[in-house]
Image 1 (cartoon, rainbow, N blue to C red):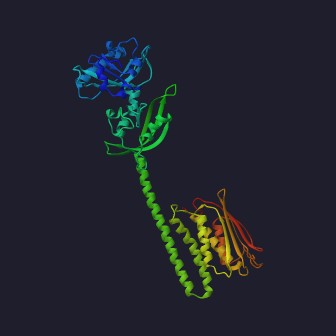
Image 2: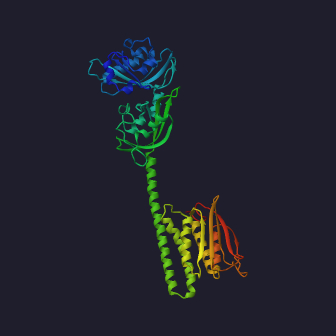
Image 3: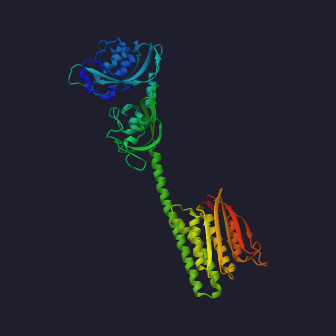
Length: 480
């Protein structure tokens, strides 16, 4: 860096001196150059120029010379540390084209000199313009549009230091331009958390990932503590690396939008869902307990009643158990509208078997697949199994020493397929499965109808029922 007074350079942040996006110039009160960073010199100054012999008015468009001079005077007159903003056009070296630059000009305080010095920090507004182009409405420049964006945007150097920010970014982050510029993602001043509230490591931040991978990082959710608002502001962040023609990283443009309202609404919905889940779990628990009371009353009646009524009462108790067990399984799991049908039947079938009195042992062979079935299909399926087992134990094994029951279930293209069979003698000629008026068979057919099942039954020499039904997400007659 060339300088009239080299010691001034040591008082300027290194990131600004070496920036490839920001222009840095220091002039005296007359506009004579004292310092210019390499980015400014490489863009606007011919190699034949001597910096110390140049005035800032030598490189701006002629009709803007007066404006530049007045800006420098205003900086000295204000002398309050607040920058004076200016948009003007600088001639690109070795060409007749211009770049529009937005400058922030302020007094440069230095104890080593009594001379008034002006610090000019600028960045591009538009790409390339010819000298004949005029800005009839400078207030509508791209820079103003950049500042008017309702999303935060910061430009970061290859070391992640911020070299440019718009007004919205400063508002969302709760920091001034001076506090932001030069700050890296590794600065200890940041307080950034992930969606779950845990600290967000600097190396995992979108800008760090974009720098490391040279890839566009999208839709990262983070909370950044805003010191002005004294709470976290939630952002959805994109970091887009800018590469030169050689594929080398030149900068990262990081954009972020405020999603705090959406985040808060999500938390409200999560709390409401948690409350609803707890309530629904409690309902299942109470239904199960109420059914247990009903079952208990029936058992008392069974013990106190006539022996001829014990079997019908026991069958009713089993029906109540088959319903209660669904609710018991549901409140024990996180999924409160469905049960694992394999777990359900593995528990239900042995429970029914224990209540059945037979002279000989009956071997029940289960071959079932795991599947989450809606409560409104699980209950009729449980009642169906209860009736099938009850009928087998009541009629099939009276004269058989080695009774066997096979129950198989598999899932195929959103269809549950079941096979139930026993090795009993089947139905006698006077019995007809389709036209029977017995309670047990009527209940079997009723549950098949409720499941909208297609079925085929064989009753000669054995009993075999093959049925299948379509899986419903909510159940055929319910909003669950």
